[in-house]
Image (cartoon, rainbow, N blue to C red):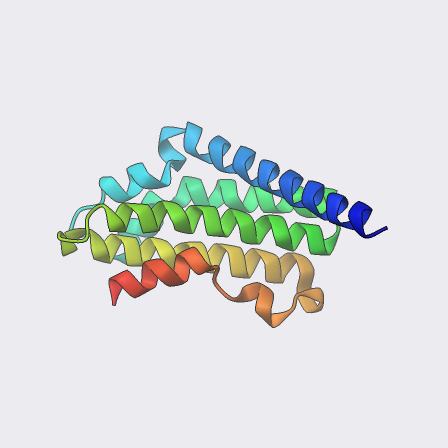
Length: 152
């Protein structure tokens, strides 16, 4: 029985990762929703409102994906996929920052982008799950925490 449980957990994790990878690749396929491109084209003088405008298409797409996922999956699977998705987008920002550590010009835009991602994921999950959502589900994933540590 233990071996079956281990096998099922392994398959579950692989399927979750595959779903997340597919969603991330879909968001990165369109020029207007490609997070790295948005970060690269951000100018030093741009503020948060300009970044929100630049990320509007990505925000809308994230919201649509989350609504569709919520309709299809149970709450726990929905949260796991959303957190994986959030983490993968955080990894994109983290890799972007790591490749530009010596150039702090990119920090402001990246900080705004992380805040916008946090807002989208937390607010959409809260709106869709309400009281069924646990506090730990709203905590930023590790990649976002690591990216923020570079920004400090």
